[in-house]
Length: 273
Image (cartoon, rainbow, N blue to C red; front, side):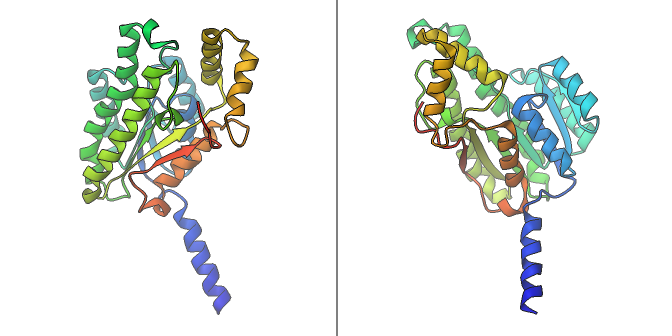
């Protein structure tokens, strides 16, 4: 009898680690990279997923590979486009249980005195203002949800550490953490959880571009800069988009029902930037 009871408890606990099938999910910048990994992973658990992205070609590829995921082409930094996304979400999903605010760009690389005001503003518009536009429209839908509603904001390890030569990017990622923690307090009484994921150095084309730009700014070979990045990580390896997706799945699951207001680093423990 005790063994049977243990198995029942064990199996019940394992079940809480899976997001509830049928979750209605919106992933911004969801056609490639981390966003696509999150969208596909949630779809595989039985969620109904809608993504938006500014990249038409990436949206077409995602639709061809996973036709169950519905899509909208949109610039997340433009309020009118965000309105279009939510009209499509209402038509496709009929409501919302999860918002994954994943939009972000690398922004310019260089000393602060060399940065152009337009590049600074574009980074703020895409990385921070978009989070406000989507959250403000999603919150009424999340408040109406009875299916463990949550908002996941994608920040960065640069949202907990200073990042020389990347001040626009780091500033927005710190701001996202502040926005998340404030929303967690604001929405907690309504049963809506809000957390942030802080990816570290993520393998892929985007990180290759960041490393290349930083190497150029520092006047060193790309491989030297890559080794410098790895040397700052306790595990001496980059993370993958699937590592981030796994954390998002957990945050959407019943097992995370009392986790809110947290900035969760998935980075192999980056010691400094």
